[in-house]
Image 1 (cartoon, rainbow, N blue to C red):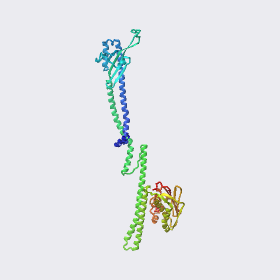
Image 2 (tube, rainbow, N blue to C red):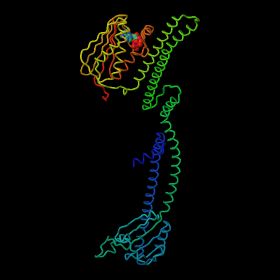
Image 3 (cartoon, rainbow, N blue to C red):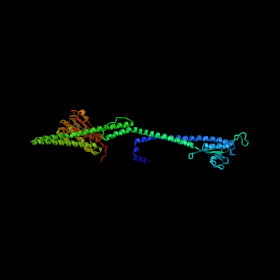
Image 4 (cartoon, rainbow, N blue to C red):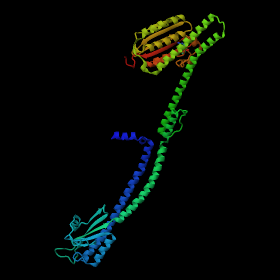
Length: 495
Ligand code: ADP
């Protein structure tokens, strides 16, 4: 059953429209009581009409019954007066009157069809026992009324066997009167009610349609605004407030717009930064090549020197592209982590060994302190990326000499790696920005020492992928300490 209903709703899409449902609901709320009321009024009119007619006829028949006794009609049905009365009532109520005596014989039929015949029916027998009766035939529109012909014994005619006040039943009067007049009035009434009903229905249709449109207008408004954005128009926030419910939708929608705007801005900024960073080495190469071309007989040493500079710019371009690729790869999803058991101490030693020549060149001492053995569920390549970027920075920003201390430690939940240097430090304003892509405290100095401004964002992304945290403490002129804290157990399952 539920399935069939669902299929119907699926087939006729408009049935799922809130506006259509509201329209139908309002229409039904107005129309159903109207129809019920019409039926109730007409039915009660009919009942009342039948009752009035029945009492009327019953009263007339009781008077006739008295006359029947008075004129001894049951023994001699030739009384002109009574017959005239019977015909009059018969004509007046458009009906037929039968007088039946105690032996069930018809002694008078105003239609003169069954006079002298015997009538055996339950109602007549009950009437002979003194019980009057009444029946309404809905189909043929007739009211059958039975009135017993009762004689109350008076003082003069009383005998010792039949005392005064005894009721003697001589027979019954059976009248079938037409209810056509009531029916005609009922039909006139029904027609009038139907006309009024049709007029009210037209009003209801208009009112329900207008109300359904007005009630659902805010929803259409919000949906149109969203469609406009989908179609590429300006993303204007919606300012109007309607119902509490739509106000909530509008607020959520506006928040979404603000978020989209922020994402859009940061994407634009990122693209412009990328273009700028990629253009810088190309511009340098162009300048170097053009200055060589402009000199006719440039010496070979100059060529060599310029070509070395061009090679350095190409290296730089290569570094930026590689860093960008690492970032983009890490932006995708956690699923890319290839988790394994990593010995953090050994890995740190490997990275330190790789960086030692650079440190030596810059006169920087590398110290490794391992507080305990650490085996963690992590992505080895990404942890190595974190270590390389942080230790490389510590060496790069050590002002020509100094000590870089790398400490590995762990508790039962996390392992920590601290990279502390005795370098130039980072001022308070910049500390919040160093994880932004392409941010550098001193752009020209960073470029001189081969920085791309992407090292820290890469390290931060790798830490976040491991559900870890990265913190910085720095004092200008004294040094900087980066602390990385990562859970020992990965949320991802080991392969
Ligand atoms: P870069 O490639 O320029 O080093 P990073 O993203 O690695 O880019 O670092 C961003 C900026 O943060 C650097 O330009 C530098 O100014 C600052 N910074 C990073 N590490 C240190 C550090 N250990 N000491 C001082 N400044 C640092």
